[in-house]
Image (cartoon, rainbow, N blue to C red):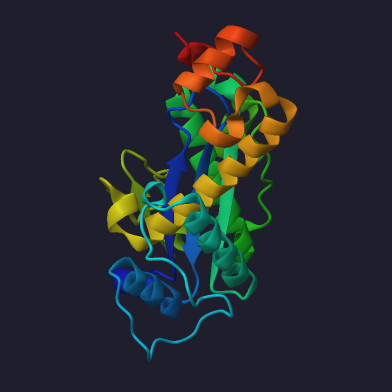
Length: 258
């Protein structure tokens, strides 16, 4: 059987929150379940306007051009996010976002935490879309779980499912920047500036960004002096001024602040 005949799903992966001095890091795995959906995303990436294009969901009209989340306004990202939630409900796509807390980032380092969140998001996507994957227990998906436990369990999961590589061969995974999926996912490609160049990575970027922003907006209500709803944890002057005045909170990354 040819490789292209084994692939049933296209998955894009991107992370958000590598650089902030507060809050979790987030990784989204975005899965395309309908080829018409990815064709629609490609047309929106290049700004094409095909009147004959199949209407995918009731909220598709009026969406901005699909781009890397950093190049969209907050309003545009939220418009895309609402559209993608409907598309997920209607069975055109699926996505999972996993978080790792600032405490674990300080303890284990950002690279290991990003990999942990990436592994979890992929495992959740697989369990939701491959019937034979569901029997594997998936734990540690919350961003406040202990990293050591979840990393060892993630390793156990991937070692277990390595016996059934035919299932993972159904995934073609595209990752942004320096990200890599576990080796059991045999069809994967890392693309520099992939969030700008590949539509499925752009979709993952949008979901990860909006999801993390919502977490930071929740923290803003708990710590109103810091303006988390504005800078979402990045090291702006206003943020550093707030730290000097009020001190650090439990969600600050101690190893990132100098």
